[in-house]
Length: 209
Image 1 (cartoon, helix red, strand yellow):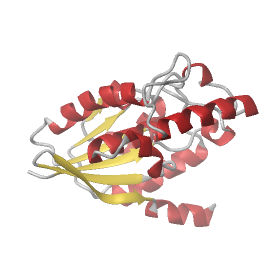
Image 2 (image 1 turned 60 degrees about the horizontal axis):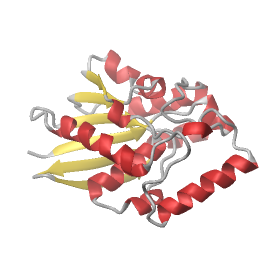
Image 3 (image 1 turned 90 degrees about the horizontal axis):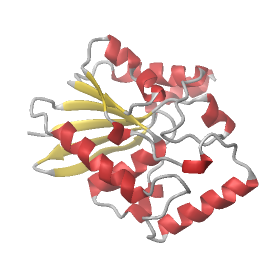
């Protein structure tokens, strides 16, 4: 039977706002705007009859879907959904030196060199391998039909490539602002994007801001 995966990025953190690199080794909370984004998503989708919610192991994803969990929705944390590790870049401000290094490595990824990483970090291939285990676990639950997944920007891009058989070198084709939603269907072993980069729940928030 058909499943629907509602995949969102976490809300904004102060480190997002300040341009400080976050990876799976940085466990920052949502800031005020991030909390408002999380609430806006909840208000827009609380009527969806979700069977379960999955998050990464990091606080910013937990806080983003806290209202759903507080409503009694079963919740599991999966390390496979964690953000990519940015190694020595984590916790650093985006200086010219860091941006030069970051741009160089993402350019290599776009050229198909997907086994390289920042020193001490993960490659896209390594992230995708742990994501495969997470997704296998998620879709193995026969009784679950509508599933909410909260994760991270770069990891989301990698996951969407995995689900749609899109080359990892094209991961940057998926935009991923905070709490942006992708709805992906799963049926007979195949995934399909049903809703691409939905940020309608943020429109009213932007007007207020």
